[in-house]
Amino acid sequence: MLNCHSWATINHKGPKLNIPSRTYNTTVTHTRQILGTTFGHPCTWNDKTVVLYDEFLKAVNDGTLFQDCEFILFEYDSSGNVIEVCYKGVWFMVDNGYLSWSNLVPPLKDGLTYQQIRFSEWLESMRKDIECTFGILKGRFAVLRYGIRLQSIEKCDQLYVTCCALHNRLLFIDGLDKGWKDGVESNWEREYRDEGEIPFAVQRLNRLHNNDNVQSQDDNDDNTVETIDFHKYEVNGKRIVSKMPLSIFQNRLIENFDIRFRRNDIQWPKRINRPSSIV
Figure 1 (tube, helix red, strand yellow):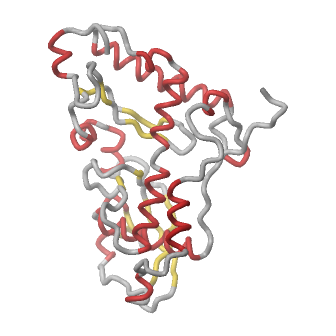
Figure 2 (tube, rainbow, N blue to C red):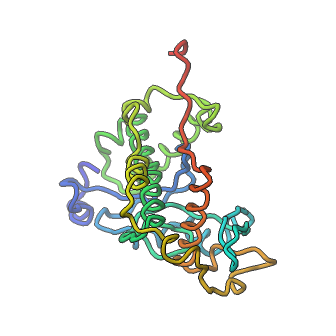
Figure 3 (cartoon, rainbow, N blue to C red):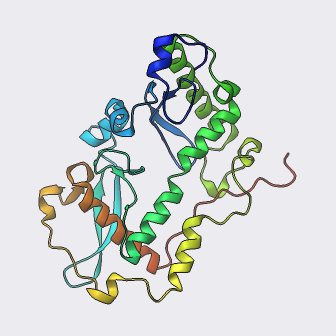
């Protein structure tokens, strides 16, 4: 925001930038499609405050949106056998600045076990999708890169939402919304990532895999199962994500990730490069 009124300058000047700025809470998929975004708020607001104005995430947390979506998580039963459990709802990867909602899963701050560190490091790398999307938006629309020269806060918010809508439309037109196995790579995406760079989570996992000093849950409790009554979170035999506390659901995700990792069932999503004949 440039050339704005003095009262707006004071309210929108945060610690990160020396110019008045707006903050938006935006939700994206791994294919860079924007699912929802808030209107702007002063950049002095933190994530815990802004998320309260996010109607998209609030609807998911209340169980009124995406409640029919189902997915399977692996976990250990009381005998130590791997079983499949059906869950209903969706969840999103966030950082540790958000509220403790079960549909907003952050990485663990102080992971002590191999399983917790592995899950958290992978989650932190995957969470960078939103940063890539912001970079793509700035690459597509120069007005977002060099500053919005408008004095109306309402116009600034309308401009950002319009850019998000045009971004989604261009994804569909360019075919970038398809599955990543058959996807294509656009030219404007290349300058915002390093070619051939191995994700940090993969590098650290490889180091931990060769380190015998890392504590592992399997060495201590031999797949001990937590005694939790999940029936209060179930409807028709399926666990509802929005009804579960964050800590319990997060532990289910960590256990599922550990089981799939041991089965060599975890893959790093990657878009197939555009053929060399296409410029």
